[in-house]
Length: 513
Ligand SMILES: Nc1nc2c(c(=O)[nH]1)N[C@H]1C(S)=C(S)[C@@H](COP(=O)(O)O)O[C@H]1N2
Ligand SMILES: [Mo]
Image (cartoon, rainbow, N blue to C red; front, top):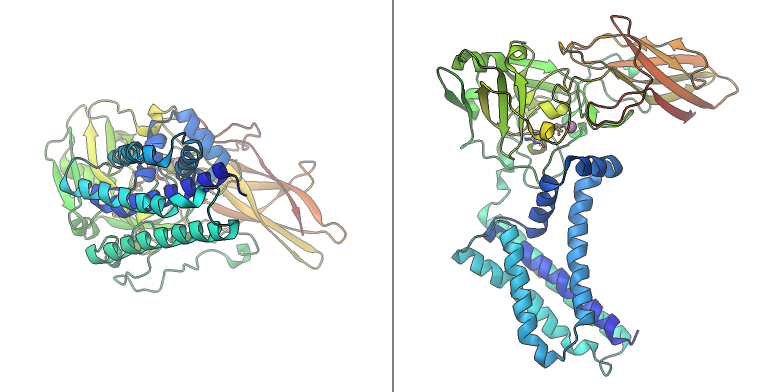
């Protein structure tokens, strides 16, 4: 590896990595980390079909993959620029400096920086480390420079020491300023934590954090718990980092086409007399047949009907629009708001909502897809006009009533006996679960059997099902499942993709046991 361009590319890559670490160090001064802001900008600006495709192909990992691509892309650009740089080093330095500062200013502007002493310091913090790194490595790329092993050791050291010290400085800075230190109060989940349920809240110490609801006969290998623990509930939203809302300054405004607008503080919401507890299934409209974007947590919240009635809606009001801290919005017709099961939820599983699930409060609309359930809610606007919501604008169904669905989840063998099982959910207009029966085939649809249904744990919750049969000499089964609703309708076999109105079709899964 004596070829100079390869060495130059390696140096360029290291300089790029150190540059990113510098941007990360400067982030608190300008209000954000440029690659995250860039990735978020791509998500918000990309057409609906593209975000749908990305979520479809990459699932959960769509956002991390996008952020990763931005990071890798920046390092790659730096490597290529170094490898192809046509001038001698002496001529190059001023021009390279100008380019580096320009790229940094652009990156910090993308991250939300404006002209201020803080951002000038931010630019200096982000430019100096890669500059120092490039000086330290500048002699390493000439043919007369050290041998390969020494070269590798040298750029490795600069990369590790440079990046490590910048990240260390940033961590120290966070500790000093208390960034993310709000985690102690009210379970905001800290910043950037993936872990849900910040179990440090004790205001409700009834030991119910691991609910043991449901019939234990439906708890076997592969089966979900009857009630989903907060840390097991899926997360879907438009953000790379969820908004970090300060509960002390947060208010929920109730206004718009009303006679008496008002607002509530976090404590006023939690102490509201119309608080209720409710186990409710939530499923994302982009969940494919059999997918994991579904869960059934226990929620506590205030009935939306009460909150809206208190403001006294004007004649001619048609919609209730919920607005969120991340710019998201959703609308539901005023007439369905009269239902008592629509909540502004502030707890999940007897703890305050985790940041990623919408702390301090979110909407819960049983029977509709998750897109209706605005997280990080800041405003309830009663509207006299039809409102076009975030996803509706991007081509998704406005009503978003959950399609009847049934999934295969678990399978277990005990001697000759085999048990298969799963979940079924049919949220109809009323939000009340309407599953009457589940039928299951273990021979790819040739014959059908009635499954056992778990007694209903709540009006808006999924039903777990199981089917026990003898199979002494067979170990592979093509399991197919379909649900039947109370009015006798058999779940449609016709497949539809999630967009625009949610997936349909029977779930088939080949299992070995
Ligand atoms: N503010 C806000 N609320 C939001 C979203 C969002 O991007 N921003 N995504 C919605 C979608 S598409 C779904 S499926 C649910 C997911 O809620 P969860 O992450 O708590 O499971 O939140 C909904 N509420
Ligand atoms: Mo969703």
